[in-house]
Image 1 (tube, rainbow, N blue to C red):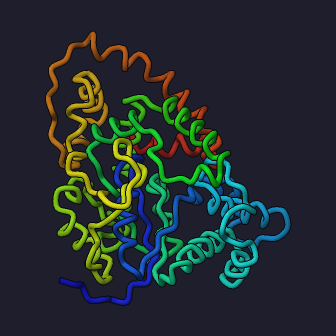
Image 2 (image 1 turned 120 degrees about the horizontal axis):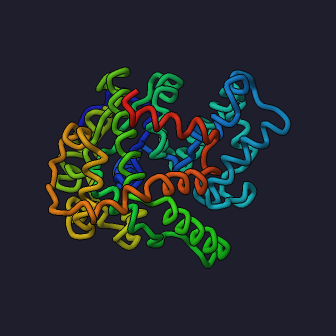
Length: 358
């Protein structure tokens, strides 16, 4: 069955908590020849915040223009945070600048120009972008692009915690062509390990889930979709068909034949992206104490998202070390991720307000 086109031309924004299946959704959407989703830019939660509101209203020039261009061009060399070189990527400065100038030359125009240039490589008319943490900036994104739609990937927080704890690079990069990338990959793995704590990841999950719910309440279910990761793994064809119908674009014939990308457990591969075992792997990989801590931190949000408690049998002695180490872990995570946010105090405050229900 194919869905009729409703004239939707994008953009499509994919977000969620880290390790929630945003990469596999991106790969599935890109099975449609009309869709091409740009890789993670972090623009709305990083560079845009750092530039400040006054800079967003006027065309860029001089050093400011070069700063923005370098930011985006580096992403075509290596992923965000991996030390990409602006002049070493596939996108040309002249092409990015020309398209951005045509759109108005402001910072947001450069974001759109970058995504459109990315899509143009595949002659795809529908462009988009995937950054998990952009869930905290959906209001700005959906307001800035009134024709856009956003999909939030919702995954069991216990699975998110397990995947984050066990994450490591599983391939997909040509290290012979770019040998220096190996060092930045190792540094990123170290950053992820230092950022990990079950309480930190659980609280981020709560904040992200609430941010997505608020966005859906504000913009409506026709523009914001909360997509359960487990449903995609369990019945990928029917779930993806529903996603394509919601977007109003034609269902590709092989939409479930997607590659494995950025998995914590599966090697990079051209096929096999939907792994049914990923739904409940956490039951085997997390200890009862870890499960108990996650469930306690997520509280009512766990049930509100449709996930049942595992009711792990554990003792206070087993869970106390996690609670005692939580505050230092939160501080450590903030420090090691400081360069990945445009404004660290604002970055923390926005998430904290959501955790506290404000």
